Image (cartoon, rainbow, N blue to C red; front, side):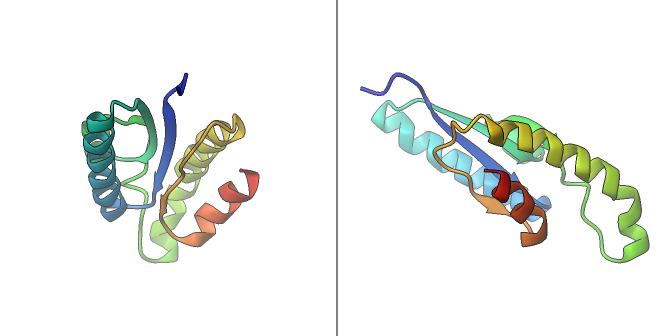
Length: 113
């Protein structure tokens, strides 16, 4: 018998990822509820994922942009969320880590995992 919950970390890169992540969280909760399996879901996402019951590490739904000048004010907030996410990766308790974002952002965090 499992003594601790399944831990899942979901990382999204924009509003669309937040929508997909929320749908995944809802499906996981529905599926695990039938099997009486406890899960903990943490997310780098947005309101939709939080509404589905995730513990939000950081809200990054307002951090996407098109164009270099538009992106400059978003660099520091993005780095701050990445640092918080890395801290969650380091403890090594994750059974599942799905990503919905551009590879450049994910790759650096995945290398630490």
